[in-house]
Length: 70
Picture 1 (spheres, rainbow, N blue to C red):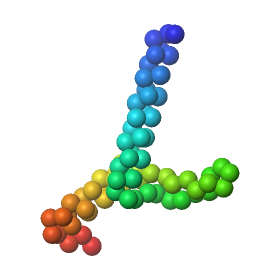
Picture 2 (tube, rainbow, N blue to C red):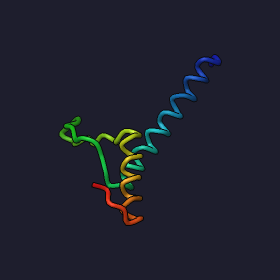
Picture 3 (cartoon, helix red, strand yellow):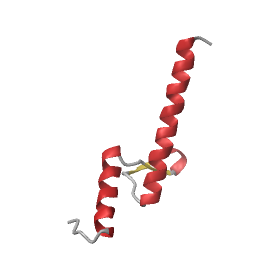
């Protein structure tokens, strides 16, 4: 394997790890993006963007601290 292949593998692994982290945060927050029809009649839930995750965390912190979040 070349150095470029090693680097590509490392980048792919980091992308998968980041995608897993986003999915885990969405699960913990109970928030997902849109629902789409997937293969074999399954429903696919998309994860929120980083900004949407951050905004939801800020909203929940505001509620916990007794601030209005309208």
